[in-house]
Image (cartoon, rainbow, N blue to C red):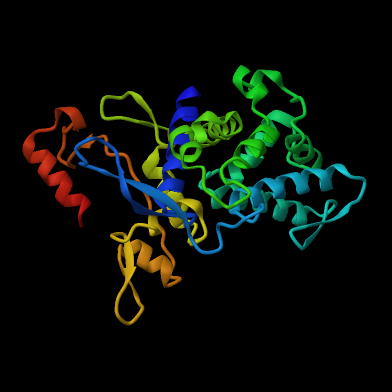
Length: 317
């Protein structure tokens, strides 16, 4: 899964530095250029309101503190804990779910689009369950139950190293370490690569439903997830706080508001913003076949221009 360890962290880092998730905004730096001709001016990262601050008040320091406080709390002998002013009972299934949701939310806030389903999948595979003991072992970087499920690089990918790294992103004076964020990025953090691997594994779980193609060969009617099926699933959640939906909504050309404050742009995102139900389905097109007697059909790669044209018109009905 090394591909995911490269793809997801780079993608997550772009979400962060582009301003799509609301941590930073970019502005041109006066007098700073990328080349001698001045063809490009260097941009600087500035915190958006509520994201920066001195002496540990910035979003990265607050995130690291959350994980440190949570780790200490779940490791203690107390079943009733308080994190960021919120009370939880570790014996409560509902409260444990809220803790997991908050873990995912903290990561999403700084651009790491790790999902709750991926968290439970990772806990189950590494620690044999999704209960409070699995969460405790995850937060404490404990040895895993099934060593076969772990890449060698993941064994050194600790939560503590992640906390230490993001604590260097902003100085005590509130100054952003732009080089560490932009040039080094999440791809240099082993813990983030570990999350990326499990996000990829979670997305690639298969269903074994099969169908027959026009040539009689067996096809998986539901196969490995791809970007389209993933996005459709997230849109169908009708959750404007969903990480993927938030990113899609962050682009002005996808959705914006008119002079009356009403959402406009993408039909689907507009419906979500208006709390209207959406139910999108995806289908894999494998070929063209009529109901004429004796027609064996044409595979997609062997279609004539006319068949391709008719098929596209039919899909648009």
